[in-house]
Image (cartoon, rainbow over all chains, first blue to last red; front, side):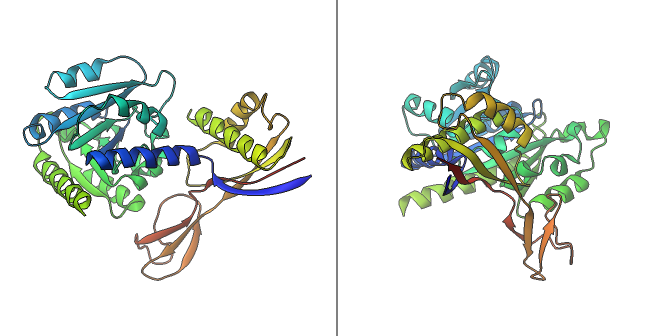
Length: 222
Length: 113
């Protein structure tokens, strides 16, 4: 019996495809944000709030990942931005290959591409899709301990949004504790506290994304 | 749940490597799985039994090597191995940590004829 050293990551083909996607997004000069949260955390509401304001100053595409149906993509397209739906059928996450299928459907250059991943705190964290960064959303009814229970996502996400601040009087969520728990996994995380219902806290999110958009434009000019 | 697609990638990778290295039959896949990944060996084994058929891995089994989470503290510069992925230095409590290992999910080697 012979032994052959391989030393390759199992997801090498996904990583390779993600790099190729990244190349396409770079040529389009698009900032791509991979939005990950559990079902019902408010991914779509967050996107809608963002889109409604930011569509005035930049060209936005939303890529909607869902196991089934087009409920979210229909409601987002009513805001007057382009939406592309990916239905994964059985898969619990988007990967680089599913994302690649979207590329031929992109007919113009967008400044900002928001990818709404499948509602899940576990699987989407493992698969790169060619994004600039991951944005995780944690909503107050889920509890302030979630960063410790789902450490990988909160470790990998550059931006973490605590959503549904408007529900704080009704749930046992301690924002300070949540932030402390996030920082145990990811001391460098950029953290925002918002309500996609009332709009509280979004000014800082807009400012941050504008800063990232400018940084991306500068990068492509180099 | 995501182990299905992950195991498919594993079988594809090992099959390709077997073809490339002229190995007709893979018997053992030595797989490194870091403790700071979300992959369950039991699920991978379950899907592997189904996915390996009609490939060069059809008679193979997987040997899992768990890779511990090792960190280095940027403040006190001490190295430590931690059980849970809470990235705090056990010596000084700092969260300025470099992750040294634990995120591995790779095929170390294949064995066969």
